[in-house]
Length: 371
Image 1 (cartoon, rainbow, N blue to C red):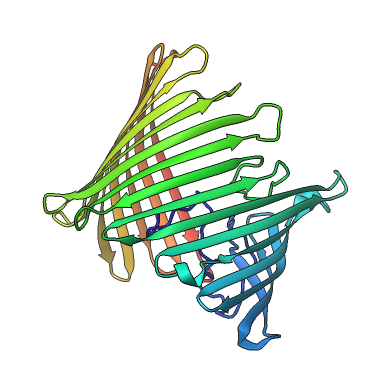
Image 2: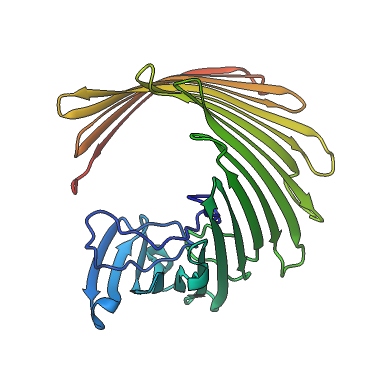
């Protein structure tokens, strides 16, 4: 839940925001079903209907060899924003093979419910074509309804459904899946938050081996004493009528953080996960404990940081394996350059083979020409 809104992972209910350096009148064609952001943009803003409808022709790179080109229209009517995108995703090393995607998304809250609710939705159609295969088509739809918080209490519902042929590049959703999520949030006092959620997923719903899974989550965060913040998260995942699945998984995570008393950003994290494997019901436990600290330093015009960190991972099934990692990360950067030095030590024991110990040194340098 974000500001009282429940959303599916990676599928933001808000309209896309432009990156720095892009004119405010440019409308980027995109979809909430993909996570790729354009890191370089060439745009031609258009205003065929004045200020009532923003239009732009855009071409940009979303990864090393993948590009997106298309047109987007964005308009506002009353309190609702609506955006239509039509674009092509093209990978250079795949010849003429590419993918077309059309997306209609926005805020659709009726006026009568505006004071209490937010309703957002998206409908997307995708078509993949090329010389190497026949055209494949798919569709995706999602709805998000969020109750605005009242007296510290809020809730949200999210529904999504995708056909088997819905495979946009950089997809954050699973083709052939139907999903229903619900979340409740409550703030009992200032600085504290209690959240409970349930998630039901039907995978491969049109296939030969459909699989139903459900997940429950509970988290609580609050300030402890004057300078210490604590967050406890638990989750449980189960599968129903699945021929193949990862098994039952229970997990809890405790995070303690402090940055006011010492002036350092100190984080202590304990994460424990227990998995019961399918069929054999064998138990497999994984634990991860880590401590890190980071102060903010200034070296003249440069910003610097020093981050000592210690991590211990343990995996227990028929035997126990331990991996201990210690390290020191040093960063120095200004508005154009970044230098990172890592000094570390790693020890592995109980893996079934010979124990292994190794020291590591890594040096990285980055220069930003457009800073």
